Amino acid sequence: MIDRLEASLNFHQQALGLRQERQKVLASNIANADTPGYKARDMDFASELQKAVKQGGDSSGLALSRTSARHIEGQGLPGPSRDLLYRVPDQPSLDGNTVDMDRERTQFADNSVRYQSALTILNSRIQGLKKAMQPE
Amino acid sequence: MSMFSIFDISGSAMSAQSQRMNVTASNLANADSVSGPDGEAYRAKQVMFETRAQSRDGIGGVGVREVVEDPSPMRMEYRPGHPLADEEGYVTMPNVDPVGEMVNMISASRSYQANVEVMNTNKQLMLKTLTLGEG
Image 1 (cartoon, rainbow over the protein chains, first blue to last red):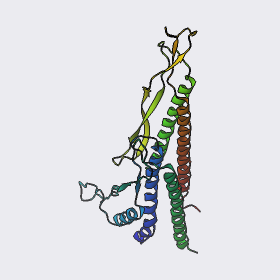
Image 2 (tube, chains in turn cyan, orange):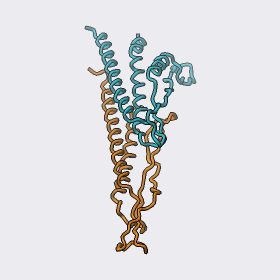
Image 3 (cartoon, rainbow over the protein chains, first blue to last red):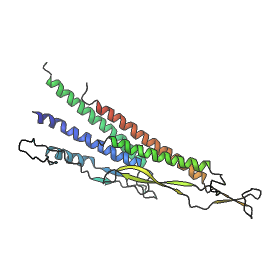
Image 4 (tube, chains in turn yellow, cyan):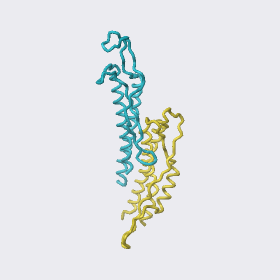
């Protein structure tokens, strides 16, 4: 029963985590807009999300070492291994920096709105489950 | 908690850009300083940015590696009556390029604003995340 609950929240949890990680990558791009030689990064969100949902299901994380048979088995979350891609610049600058501020700002705003929508969906899912658990 | 690290990233960019603004202010203020503490005319200074990566994939904030002196030649001005003029009547003036410095200033302030906006957006998202599951 409890794992059903987790499964119903898992997808949006993964999406939220990935959105937040993409937010960090975009923030780094914006921060390094004037750094010579910096290459702008981004991720292919759809394929990363597919990978994250698939990985989130199985338990290939770090295992706790048990020195007694009475210890409770524990599994950590698998570490994030994201494939970050490089942006292809349309107007490369002389100092080797490939950050296009307009594009980064657009993507950042887009990502924030999608983060909020994932949050809203997750919230209403929780509300729905809570309502279903009420006695009357 | 990697959401807090966005604050580090944007914060480092903000302090780097404000340092750049500081250097620009110093250059503009000293555009006509013919003599400094060492007796020489002021030399324009520029900041050099570098990425301060937080992880292996090169994502991270930005920092100022060093403040370098502009190697361009000093401006020679013909002012025979000036007390610091050489025997031919030329005074060594700073090599500050006021137009370039104004451009630098605008660029630094725009980048600073962009990072402030990133920080604000992120703060809102974090506060919203904290209310997850509430009524």
